[in-house]
Length: 151
Image 1 (cartoon, rainbow, N blue to C red):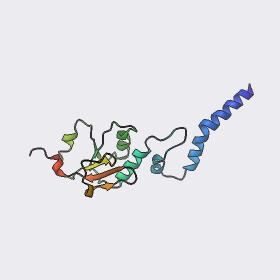
Image 2: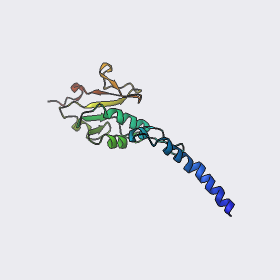
Image 3: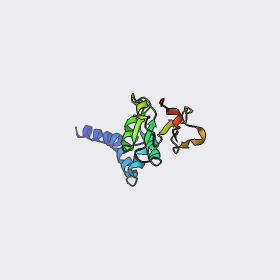
Image 4: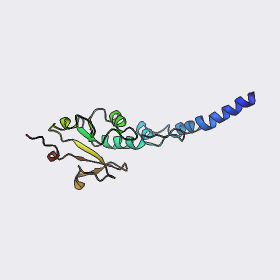
């Protein structure tokens, strides 16, 4: 009986507790941002690491209260929830929001458009585009010509 309990405790410790304890020990000296951006323990990988990298890079470039036009929030990795958490002081509009055009009617400051590089973004002019680190995303200030509403 004690042998069975001992074997079970060994298995639980080595398979479940071991990777987490190792992860915690290796990351004690890192900031919250660094921990959010890394891959996580082996038994529970961080599916939001790339999205946190995008959000933290973007946070360095935005002005408080600036409107941000982000890709659709219905993506793998819950793009919407991470962006809302990190950039909570900004006005966030996602490409699939039903009030998208109403939000873009604001005049100043021009919104920032965030898009993936891979898809060959259509809203950002290449010479005006700034890269968000090694995330695969870029951003640019919106050209008001895109958002004229028949004045």
